[in-house]
Length: 81
Image 1 (cartoon, rainbow, N blue to C red):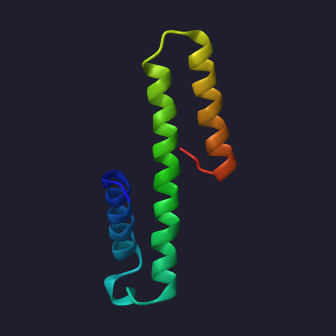
Image 2: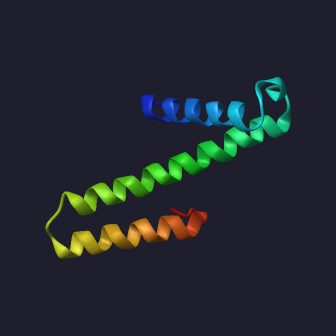
């Protein structure tokens, strides 16, 4: 895994500690919370990359493509703002 993915996984783990509790760390549902949050963070990161492409380009076609890509990713994975 690259550094960014590791950071996202650490963030997901911290989320699980805060929401489920460290005392449940060995349980399967604790791991499920980590997996779910990790997936959400990856999807949000992908959406942010589309936003970055939009912001860094003046070409209307590129901006439109970035917007469509952003919305398609969010819809496909069911991520809300």
